[in-house]
Image 1: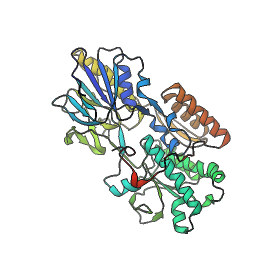
Image 2: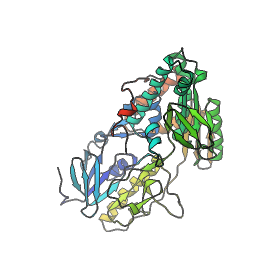
Image 3: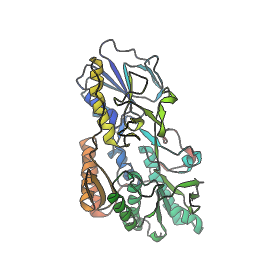
Image 4: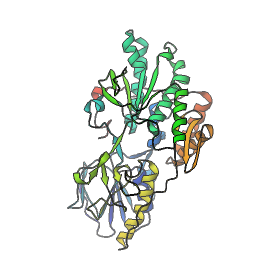
Length: 433
């Protein structure tokens, strides 16, 4: 059902309930505005821990939190579980599967999705991990292939079932490869005593010369060493040329037979229909100015992974990490109020508080400005920061208990095939476009 434009306070529509959208809405509490958030899911996903859902370390609901509950008690906030179809800037309207909504100010905070660089074959045969449904699909695929390996008699097919290739050496790829190695070392030998774990191989393929490219050389070297200590075969300066579901071909011509290609090689912005093509830049992101306004519009903004704020200081835009989205959401709340009050907006300045990645038990790397450290202390810092960033006390408690149990028992409790994965029957619900 369509809704009319507010005749009282200005209406701000936020598309997306990620880190940026949540911070924006929270910082507009008690302001003289109406906030309407639209999202295809009714929950916020803590994406940094998706890899632990995919590898059986956490339950899916421990990293998800109902959006309505986040804003419980915020009187100027409304949420609609809706899929955005098209934006109509000339009418200041957003069309969704449940009707049209009108805005005074629109904020696109739709985040990013996996980037397959135009290859439909890679998109079909590889396994991405950007949403909870995708993480659950990955978990099911991994466990189903291990089950199949138990009964497979053909040595080549069995090798393919036990070879795991992780593409992309960013934080997600490094953390996923490390988690798979932890499974191989501590969990799978107990679950699958009939399988020889020496036959299970984990490859990490990265196109640049180092893993964790945005981090310091010290962290890059340490994470590489940690991965090799865990038995991961790190292939740098290497790209995926092709994959047909059974065999992956690398840029140097080498081939790996595998049924498990876990894709984390790139992301691109999720841009709603209605944003002109000339506003889209490299990586499928929307070009914005220093106030997060989409170029050419006074009333449409973009924040987080979908926004590209390209300046002399940041010629490639900001990194696609949660702190950027959160800071942009907080800052935009201030600017929208200033604009409503006929005041000049303030330019956004990102305060980089550092970056970190974990490779496995007692192994992590942390860069905090000029302070860099690795190993056990870095691992505890990584855990503390992620726990504190999780939304909801219950989620913090559940994740903490899971981590403590896993640390002392060398076990993971969610190795469940609840919804068997079948690539041929994948629907729009399980792959976000």
